[in-house]
Length: 380
Length: 133
Image 1 (tube, each protein chain N blue to C red):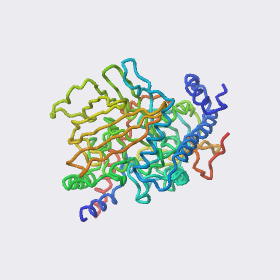
Image 2 (cartoon, chains in turn green, orange):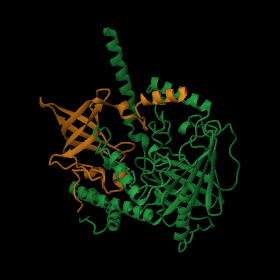
Image 3 (spheres, chains in turn blue, purple):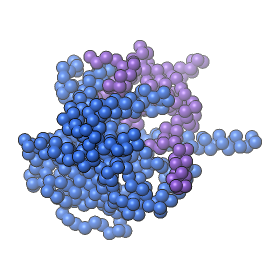
Image 4 (spheres, rainbow over the protein chains, first blue to last red):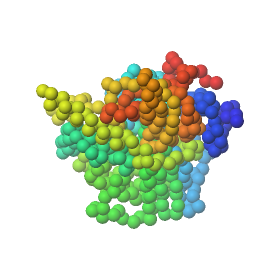
C-alpha cells in the first residue's frame, strides 16, 4: 500500500483513511511518513512568518500590536461570515489546538518589546525550537522529540508574551499572604516530594490536568487552557443551552450551561471549578468560580474568579483570552490571549490511569532512595 | 526582597517539576544502553511502554520496559503500536528506574541499521537530520 503522499494535505487524509489498514504497515513506511510529517510541520512556520511580515511595525507598543491584530482580524473577516449553530449561537465547534512558541510571560530579553519583527520572530522561533528539542540537548533525559507537539510559531504579531495585561507581559506580584503560602508550599513539597500518591501532581495521579507543580514553570494547566508539550487539543461541542469542551489531556470535560443559572453555593467546590457561560455579541464569556483548595495555578486557589472569552475570528482561528482575578493571590488581575487554531486531527482517548506505571515508579523510586539513605546513615 | 531571595533559592534548588519529574522516576546516574528484541508495545496514556528481551553477557534473558511519551501524538502521524513490530531488534539509550527495576526512560531508540525510531524535530537544522523526501 502506497502511503507516500504527493502533498502534505493528502498525507494527512491518507493517515486517517489508512488508519484501519495502517496495522499492516511495515515500520519502513512509518519512517517515510515521518519525513513527510516534517515537511508538513514547516508550513505553519512559513505561513506564520508571512502573517507576521504583513503586520510588521517598527517597535510596536502593546496597544499597537493588539490594534494591528484586531485590524488584521477585521480585514480577514471581510469575506468570512460567522457560522452559527441551528439555535443561533456562533459556531465554535471542532477540534482546536493552542500550541505556540510564545511564552506566557515576556522574557527579560524582550522587556520593552511587546512584539517582534518578522525577522526577529523567525530567529526566535528557530532558536526556541532548537533549545526546546530534546534531541539537541546534551543531557538527554526526556523522550525523543518525536513524541512532542510543541508548535513552531509565535503568536500573531510576533507577540513576546501570551499575557496582554499588564502591559509588561508579566504576572503581577503576589500578595504578601500568597507569597508566604507559596514559600511554605515549596518547603513542604521539597521535604515531602513523594510520601504517597497525594504528594504527586494531580495529572500524575490521572485525576485532572491542573498545574500543581511547585514552581509552575511548566505553565501547563487545563484551566485556564494553556498549551502543553503534547496533546494540546480541545474539542468544542455546542447544543442549545450548553457548550462542552473536551480537553485531550487528560480527558477532562467542561460542560458550560448558558441559561444564566447561578453558580453552585460556595460550599460546593470542584477541581475545574463551576463554569457559567453567556454570549456577548459573538464572544462566549465563561465565568468560573468554586475551585477547590487543590487548585494552585500560579499560586491561586479557591478564591479565583476565572473569566474566559472565546471569539471565532475566521474559519481557522478562535481568539481565546483568559483573566485571572484573585485579589487574595494577585495584586492585580492579569489577562493572557492564546490563539486556538483549527486542526483536522482527531482527539484520541486518554485513558490515563490504565498506563500509569509512572506514578507507582515515582513512589517506588522515593522508597528506594529513602532505603539507600537509611542504609548509608547506619554505616556511620 | 528577602522573601524573593528565599523563593529564588528554594526554587533554584528544586528540580523543575512538570507533571511528574524525570528525577522522581529515573536515575540520571544510572544510564542504560540496551540491545534487545521487542516483545510487546503498549500504546497507552500517559506514557507508552516498549517491552524488550535483553540477553546479558551470561546468556540470560531479562525483560525490560522502556517508557516513551504519549502515543496520541504518534497516532496523529499514522504511527501505531504495530509500527514497531514484535521481534524487531532495537537499541535503547536512556536512564534506569530509580528503584533499580528493569525499567528505563527511552531517550533514544534506534534500529540496528542505525535509523533512529521516532526521529527528530523538523526544521531544527540538527546535523544528523535526514533530508526530506
